[in-house]
Image 1 (tube, rainbow, N blue to C red):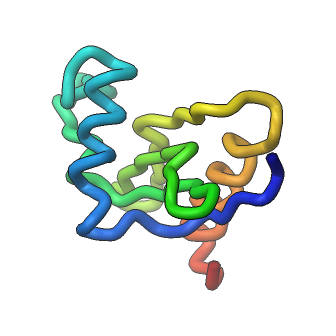
Image 2: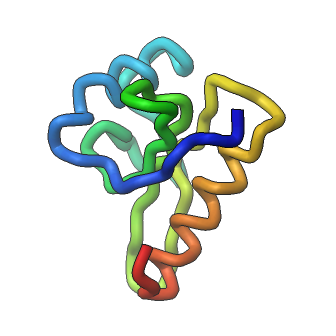
Length: 97
């Protein structure tokens, strides 16, 4: 199952991102640091196996801080979460993905 790719979320991904957040969290909003956030409107990375999304990480950058707002994978134990975190770390450091 390690044959997946990680890429930035595209505008065309917003519907399934909202659907995944709603199914996992019970709502399309989350509260982090006393802020109401809509993960489907945030920047993020998704892991795909073929055309199917199998992982999601959303984040926000404020000043020098990068906060992971949500992270989720539909398959456990294959490194999806680690790959998503590595992608956002590279983004935070300004590296090309």
